[in-house]
Structure formats: C-alpha cells, structure tokens
Image 1 (cartoon, one colour):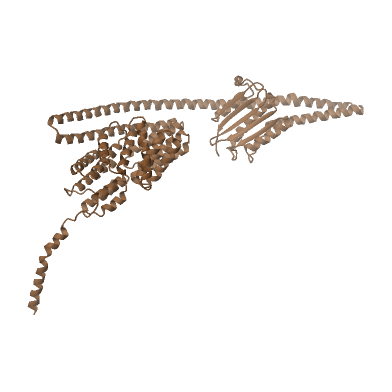
Image 2: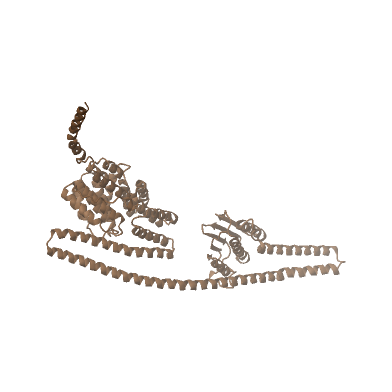
Length: 634
C-alpha cells in the first residue's frame, strides 16, 4: 500500500511540474502599459503635477513609472529642494521611446534648474526633441518644445530669436486651450524680455488673456501666468491701480507652489517699484523683503543680482546715495558673471548645433561650423579680457573714490568741529549781551526810579511840617513810583525767567509763557500744536523754548505788533515751529553776526542741531520765522 501511494504521489507531482513553464511564462511576461501617456502629458502641461503622478502610478512598467513620477517631481519643485532628493537615473538601457524621452527631459530639467551655467540643458532638450520627432508622437513633441522654450525663458535678456522656430513648430501643433495658452504666454514673455518697446502686437496678445481668465479652472496654476502677464501689461500701460490688483491676484494664485516661485518673486519686486514711484518707502521695503524670501535657492546669482539692483533703486529714491552705490556695485559685479553665463549658454547651444551637423553635413560644412565656433570662442575670450580690464579699471576708480570720500569725511569733521566751537562762542556772546542788557535796564530804569524814591524819602525826613495836601501828593507819587518799579521787575522776571517745568514739558511752558507775556505787554499770543502728545528729549525742549522766547522778546522790543501766532508740529523725525507776527517787519539781508536782534545766533544754533531756519519779512506786513530741528529721543 505504501509503495502504491508513493508512486501515485510522484505521478501527481510530475503532472503539476508540466504546468510550471506556463505559470512562469505568464508571471514574467512583460505587462502592457496601463497609464495613459497622452493624459499624463496634458496634466504636466497644465502644471497639475500631483494628478500627473497619480496617473503615472497606474503604469505597470516600473522603469517608465519611475521616470514619469520623477519628471513630475522635478517640475513641481523647480530647483527649490536639494538635488540629492532625486534618485539617480537608471543605467538600464531601453528601446522604449517614451521612457528615453522622459528620462532625457528629466536630465535636461535638472541641469536647467541646478547647474550654474545650465550646461547640458539645451543638449538634453534638443536630443529629446529629435527622438520625439522620429517617434511622430505629437504630445511628446509638444512636451519637448515647451522644455526648450522654458530653457530660452531662463536667459537673463533675449538678444536673439533662436527660440522662434520652436515656438512656430508648437503653434503648428495647436489643438486645445492649453496649447493656445502657452503660445500666448511665451509670445508675451519673449516680447518683454527683448529690448523692444511696447507695440500694438503686445497689447493684442494681452487682450487674449481675457479668454483664459474665464475659461480656465479658477484653481488652475496657469492663472498665475495670466494674472501676472495682465498686471505687467497694465503696468506698462500706466494703469497702476488695476495693475496692483492683478499682481496681488497672481501672487495669491501661486498658493506657495515651488514651480510658481518666480511669479511671487517678480510680483513683489514690481509692487515695490510702484510703491517707490508713489514715495511709499516703508511698504516698498516690505515688498523687497517678500522678494528676498522668494529668491531662487538654485540660482542665487540671478536672484541676488535682481535684489541688489532693486535695493539700489529704493536707496536712491530715499536719497541714501552711499547705500545705493554699494547695492549697485554688487549688482554690477554679478552682472559681469551673468554675461559670462549667457555667453556660456550660447557656446553650449553652438556645440549642440555642431554635433548635430556633424552627422548630417559634409566635411566642408563641418569645418565652416567649427570656424564659427572658434570665432565665437575668440569673441568670448576677447569679451572676457575686455571685461576684466573694465572691472580692474572700475575697481581702481572705486578705490580712488573711497579715498576721496575719506578725505571729504575728514574735512567735514573738521568743519563740524569748527561750527561747534563757533556755536559755543555765539552762545557765550549771546549770554554776555543778555547780561549787559539786563544790567543796562537795571541801571537806566530801576536805578533812576530808586534814586527818585530816595529823594522823596529825603523830603519826608526834612520837611515834616509840610501842608497836608502837599504831603498827600508826595505819598501818592511815592506809591505810584514803587508800583511802577514793581511792574518793571515783574515784567523782566516774566520775560527772562519763564521756563520749562520738568514735569510739564515744552507745550505747557510755551502756553504759560505766552499767557504771562500777553498779560504784561497787552499782546495777543495764540499757540497751536499738532502731534505734540508726547515729550521730547529734555535738552531739545529747553533749546526750542529758548528760541521761541527770544523770538517773542524780539517781537515785543522791535516789531510793534499786536498779534503773534505760534504753531508747533511734530513729524516722525523732526519738530517744526512757526512764529508769525503782524508787526512792521525788517530787511532780512541785514542778518549778520552781531546784528538784527539775535536772529543770526538763532540760525547758527538751529544749524548746529542739524536743522534749518527760514525767515520771511515784508515791510508793514509782519515777520514769519520757521525752523525745523531733528528729533532726539530719550
């Protein structure tokens, strides 16, 4: 029994082994592609990279699936992540056209996004384009054409129309709205990247954007291109308010996608330039900071060149010329490197042309092309040598300018010290004059009054038996003379000792001074203020008060005025004071040291504080003195 069972089991296993080759054939037979390549390409061209990856995941061929997913990721991040995040391309050879084209495009895009001089990008795109043309696969051809057009868009400034054959070929393949969209966008991009001036053709292209604004999905990333190009067209046409709206719409539409970083970067810079024209420097600086955050992580040279150039524009508008020069100098050095890169791109393109013609043309044509290449290389070498000498010359000039600036700075420092000493001398001179004037007033006025009082009292001592009527008259005159002396002392005290209470501040001190002087001198003084809600630095308050006090004293002594108007305005970085009277006026050409009521001393005192004084006076129509002093905070 056991022998029969063993024999039966062996026969059964042999029958199963007969089917093993069939199972192995079915298991290892290459599976047909299940992904729709045409749909995948449409999604890539629509910038819908996540949906494209979902379509790629349905592909059974692992190599093709890898290339499809990797290409979508490269285009999605567009150089804004570490290149090491991408896997190395498989060395496995394949005769599958789609796989070869997608792999070549991925290699080209990595060079475009990460190589400093974009070395192999054009070569890879050109090879992919030739493969696609041989396959006669229209979607793949269009995909390669868009890659080549993107390459030309990366040039700093277009000096040629080498892109035109590729754009015309793409136009001949137009089949839907997405194709028409890219044709319109690239025509506008290349137009604005040339040195041409806006023409009617450009604005006709801009009007075509209306179609895409209404036909595209409201969430489509393509709308970021539409809004930005429309904003740029409105900006060029000087429709600034509407342009600002579309710049903001373009920035919002990017939704922080890495592949739309350039729209956020350029949009912020365009908004910055608009704010500069409107002299809104604080908001312009905010937009510049936003642009800094959106700088290209893989192409810092071009980003920093652009940022330095725009920072120079902002500094120049704010009249900060030293800072503007520094930013402009950095941009100049980077511009030299960008010129070198542009020439390298052109040499790379010529190399590809030569390599292609080597396979198609005779030796004579090949020699001619090599001659062109040598000429181009020679021209590049001469350009680089000339550029080096220009750079060296500029560097020498810059060094000389810096030395001149140092000499000027030393002269300015010496001049400022001289002005400071002169200001101290004027202050001492003014104090001495004030003491002398007060001494004269005490001697001439109070002294004579006291002498008269003394005579009256002598009369009381020697003539006690005088009639009562005469005695009453003498008492009355004595009382009047004492009262007059008291009023004189009180007037001098109010005029010269009214000052700033440390707890009250400048404005209350001026109001108090105005009230006292008005009461004593029967002069109407009105005080108005704007923005004087907070205290100034103590020494600045005292200086400002003393200047106003001296101006009012001049009005009382010389102007014969009945009304005075004092206006104080506090700005962000300075205080503005205006003192205006309706007096007899004077000749302002007589404002010289030692003359004209101390106005020269006031001028020098304000100038030493970094401010300036304006004096206007018309005969019989009053005088206006305006001075500005920079704020000094506690």
